[in-house]
Length: 51
Image: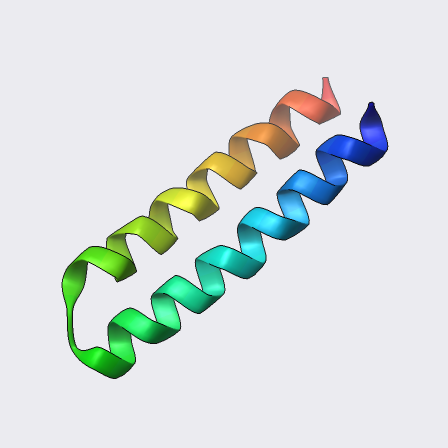
């Protein structure tokens, strides 16, 4: 289960980076905010996994 959580965290961070990049490159806010949201979700999964 821990490997699955780590994989999910990595995948969320990759998608977040792509969304932020596309948002900044295109000058549009919604993808950037979505990317930040994905980073927050990944952080919550990471903190939950540490307990």
